Length: 219
Image (cartoon, rainbow, N blue to C red):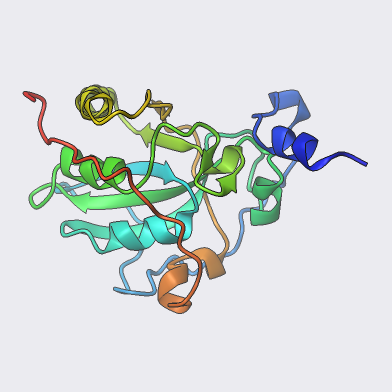
């Protein structure tokens, strides 16, 4: 029987694609409607909209923080960055799918910029912790940013560099956030969508470093 340390190490290592769980060809069934504002989160974007997919630990608290951000139109939670097709929550939590728990954010670019969304991201978790957030340990809790175009990657990298400077000045370590183009985003189960709206006293492990993130590419 594996020890607790062995189990933690297994959950904290991203598996090789060949070793990942097989998953399934059928997507999980969801309503596609946001429980807070009734906006569809399975949607085609309008010209004034953009999106980014963020992982900052357990997705329950992260989604609430982001849906309450002015300029954010709609959010959903799901899984990205791994190998297993259409994974379940239990499979992702096993550490054997390679996925991170993420929030997909659709925002109105006339109200908030990508830099503004990233400010909320950087300030509300600790992006230096590797395969964990606080007491939540495992590869599914790693810090990630997944984008859908090359221009956004440049903005993300500039934002990371600006926040890294602030972190170092405050005595923190190096950012471990995974920054990649989004491959496939899988919606999480219906009960996870807007979980803390449905369960106001539910678990929220969201915690930042106390360091403020500057906005803009000129900082």
